[in-house]
Length: 264
Image 1: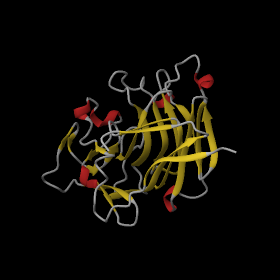
Image 2: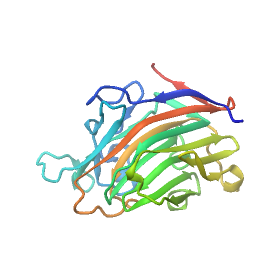
Image 3: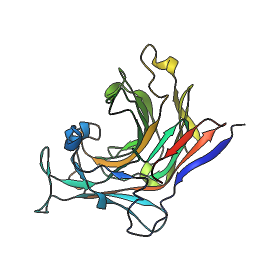
Image 4: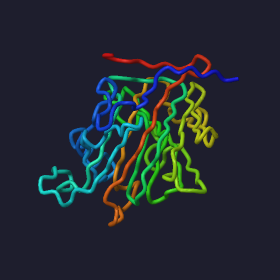
């Protein structure tokens, strides 16, 4: 029987209106221009701000995306004045992970044009820019396909539209309730789960002769994007959207898995 040992968790238990713990989470603000990737590489329309991610006082983090086209002081973006605000958080330089089970209990938003995600990037991204650093998408969802669950890895030669992954379709909209999305990440490969049921796996042998780039440390990201090439056009009636996160937990699997905490 597989033995899971909890090594780290984020339960989002702070009081209503408070922001995520700065010892764990960095705010990645703006439209991506300061990182050299305007539109975050996907022609997205949101502008990330810290105030868009707050606790609800009921043990949840809520990332709130809001249309702001009627605000005169909205920030400048790569395409002109910002149309949306939202939030993007990351644990880079604060918490890193290597192997183990990572699971997130979340409720995705409704609305065509919304694109929530819980995902990971290799900590070597500055020395080995994406996709060479590796990317693991634990959960992606799109408002244009409200019953679709997407799990993917990206690496050199298998990235963007050619990422190694799959999607599955539920009988009800994802936004109807909370679901637990997880990966089990080991040297032998990565397996995706939805509510405890396996739905996809991949391994170094599947990727060969391309390079498997998932044997080093990664950090977590959570965000709610709006629009762009992957999410598609934004419906005119969409004025706001909420991505609700109950918890994120990291376990070792039969002793395999590690977490590093910095400045805590």
